[in-house]
Image 1 (cartoon, rainbow, N blue to C red):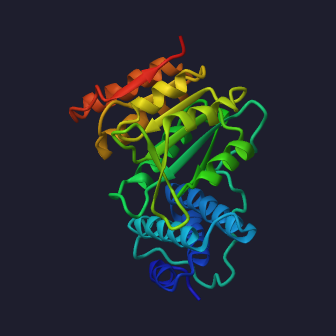
Image 2 (image 1 turned 90 degrees about the vertical axis):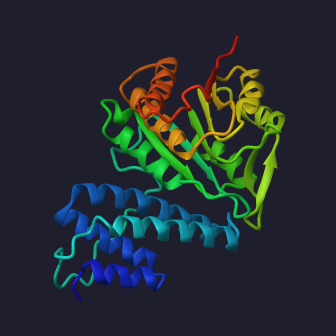
Length: 296
């Protein structure tokens, strides 16, 4: 059977996301390096989810939500597939990459810094463009001069056990949380039903203190996360937070510029300033919302 836009669309409709990703990879290999790169990243997310589901690390509800997010991302990628792209007679497409690494590249080495992207958008909260944010971060790192020095790992629909296991498994240098925060100074992860689970600033700070030997920076790209940042920095960790509600557009522009700078070899202070500059350049009127807390 030929591989084309229609065949992939049918697989998405039927819920055959793994097969759809394999076919998308084949089209990317032949017609579009950009499509191949983005699909490889999506494949890593899919394989990571499959692994977590097989091991029983996530609930069925959680898995269903994450499959839906991947399906939405596939639908977005379909916009890049041209109608005249056809591969004839490719019934056995090449398998999707099995790595859980969130971007293609060389085998991680001991000098690589792991960036752990944590996403939570509980079903009882407003929708955020988290997929758009992580795509921009991936792009910033992938095109950077020092891209081989970073490895991006992703966890979606994060629950409390997911957070501690990711810290143990990935040993991240940079933790990037993207999601919701409350005016009371708490972030929202997800509970087993997919609804919001509040986590206090004190609890998060105490957790990160256990990993002081590895964590170099925390980015809390969530509304009202300044309170969280003030608590975490007491434990000797630099933190980026938001001092009020932050628009999606400003959060995304900040993230891309921030990792543009880190990928270019600049330090944390410069990366923070470049992120604020990006918000200002787009005239989003929110450049004063990000704040950088440095240990005294």
